[in-house]
Image (cartoon, rainbow, N blue to C red; front, side, top):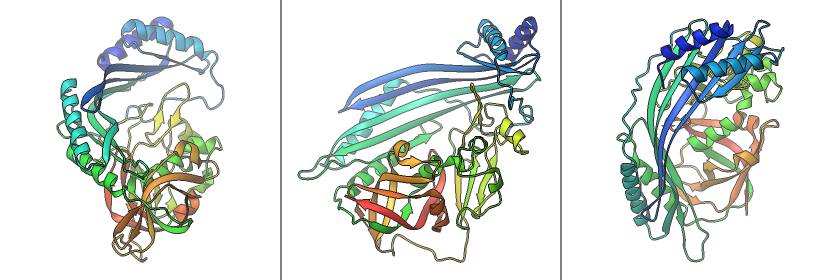
Length: 446
C-alpha cells in the first residue's frame, strides 16, 4: 500500500480537478496466510491480500456520497471520488455526517512493529506437530477436526481534505485447536483453545495445547444436571460473550435508533452490582490487535462504560456524539452508514464489603466456560437469553462435566445479581476479564 502522504497528494489533486472541496478516505489492507491440517497432512493452505478503501464526498449542498474501491493508485482514487460525488446528490438530509473534530488530534503511541511473515511450510509443520501432540494426549481424543494457524499483516490509513493524515501497521499470529473424542457408550465431547500474539515466535502454542487438552479431558466423564436455579460462575470468555451480545446497552447508535436496552437518560443510573466496572480500552497492553484510531480518524482511548455498577458512558461516533452533546470515543466504523462497535473490553472487579467466593469451597455451583449459539439464543432488544453451554458442576473444587444443558436469564437482572467479581483477570482475544459470580440463574438439563 502506498504511503498515506502519496494517497493524500493525488487525492487532493483529483478532488481539485473534479471540483470537490470536502472529502475523506479510510482504507485498510490485510495480507493473510492461513493453514489447516488433518491427520498429519495439510488440509488447506490459503494466502490472500484484501484491500478496502471507503471514500466520502460532500457536495455544495453538504450532502454526502459514499463509495468503496480496492484500488489506492491515483486512477482508482480519482474514479472513487467521482463516483462518491455523483452519489452525494442522493445523500440523506437528516443527521448528515461530518469530519471528526479530533481527526487531526495526536494519536497514542504504541509499540507495534510489523513482523516478517514465516513461510507457510513453517505454519504447517508447527500445526501438524500440535495436532499430533493433542491426539497423543489421551486415547479418547480421536481427531482435531477444527484447527488453524495464521499470520496477518494489517495496514490502515485515514485522511481528509482538511489535512488529517494517519497511518499504522501491525502484525499478529494466531492458533486454534478444537478436539473431538469418542468413547464406547458415550457421546462425542469437544473442547478447544485459541491464542493470539504479535508474532509467530511469541505465539503460546504450548499454552493452547495445554488448555485444549485439559478442557477436553475434563469433559469425558460427564453427567446430567437437574433443572433448577443455580449459583453460576461465568468464565472470562463466557462473560465477555454475554457482554458483547448486549452491547446495545452502551452503543450510542443503537440508543438513538431506539434499538437498545438504554435511553439517553440512562447515564448515571445503577444498572449493575457495585462490584463491577467495565471499560472499552482499545489500547490495553493485552490487546494484540490494538488500533490507535477509528474509521473516522478519531484517536482511540479508554472509555468508561460501567463504573461501580453505574452506567457512566456510551460508545460514540462523531455523528452520535454530536446528537447527544458528547465527544466521539474512537469506536466508529466507516461504511455506507457509520456504525459503532466496542474495541476491547476491560472488566474490573471493585472492592466491596461483600463476601468473597472460591471454587475450592463452594457446593453445587455451575461454572460456565463457553456459551454457544449466541446468534440464535439472544434477544438483544428484550434483554433475554437462553443458551447452550459447556461447563461443570463444582463441589469443593471438584469439577464434573455437565451433559447438554442451557442457561437462561435476563441480562439486566444478571448485572444486578452479580455477587462477586474475582480480582485475577485473564487476557483473552476479546478483552481482559476475571471470573464473574451470579447469585441465581435458571439451568435446564436434558
